[in-house]
Length: 367
Ligand code: MUC
Ligand code: MG
Image (cartoon, rainbow, N blue to C red):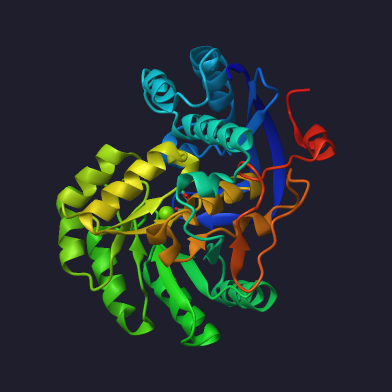
């Protein structure tokens, strides 16, 4: 089987409610649908979310990188030659979400050609993931109301709270309101998106010590090299590297530097092939992981579920899989359902992404 064509289709779907966090905000999902066609008529699908505040990519740059650089490199290869494909993609630096979407679309082709779900090809550990919901910046009472609604409507009991504002006490108050409003039987953890200094972070964690937080993600910038080590030494909970650990070498650097003690794995930036490498690195070093959210739509969420459910280590913690709920619509023919706080792996060959052609026609921006 040979790859015959790679499509990069820009589309835009507004959010009903924007997600706000310390490094930016998202009002519209301006993503890129990636489709890999083969000479056997199998089509693999995934999506790339531009996140300029994290990777420098834009929707236009992703489309250009795929059309001009990556498609010519992969057309003519077999979808099974993943090492060949990746060696060629590595000739171009950066562009993580463009490369990741292409990688996942290849795995979708492979799953479809063997007639098995990608989760089973990857590791086949389980058929579902528990869901963690990210709560963005808003007045505390709105943050509490959102979390309560997620619990009541979807059974979600794990919440990642966005922090990193100035002064840090604004976020301490929001976390306090969430604990008071939700009670002790929910899991709460925080993500600063690099918004605080190391000293703010230490003070904030001390002031929230009674809230039972389980993780603290990317509280201060990766370039605060000694500050991050100092913070790790003063924290009672794992410090998760996200934006500072976007590829295997960065994971190694952060962990060996003592600057982080857990890793966020995002299929949106490392696809399935490189996410596997990051996962096995963490497993080998005895480091916990979280399946993170790149503010994914439903296509990206199905990719995270397919990967997260494949392994024991990624299934231990709830994955961040619910923020598509704030989008006004999506491209899937069959929307994802979150029930009892879990999302099921689609039991069909590949990742299980069936695109609704009418929705694609409505939201695509290249026609
Ligand atoms: C997250 O975990 O940080 C916001 C910025 C980003 O890079 O990803 C999202 C969620
Ligand atoms: Mg994060």
